[in-house]
Length: 152
Picture (cartoon, rainbow, N blue to C red):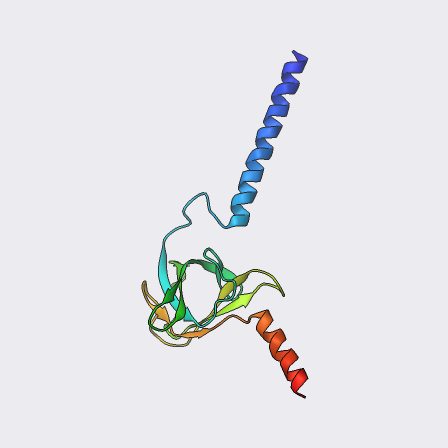
């Protein structure tokens, strides 16, 4: 009888540990178990997206308001097109808002930061952000620094 209680408690402990690992993996990967609500889609074009990836965060003042849905290339303009899903509760972004690709820390993940504009018209599903700033690529900055030092 005593061994049966120990076996059941060890099994329960193992099951709890496995569930905790699954939830941790989902949280780290950016996937969600349930639908977090409705959203609207916004596009932005960038000359260089650096290491931006789908499911990257979209933030406003450091608070996550959405995520990157997909990244593609515009054949005509030869620019990266980033589609973002913005939470429908964030209905106060004006059409002249700007988007820039930022990096969390020196070598951290890249995400999109939205800076609100001042126009009266708000973004709607399918709109595009016109004012964008591409990612700062560390290798380009280092090479510019080195070539400027060599030329002096």
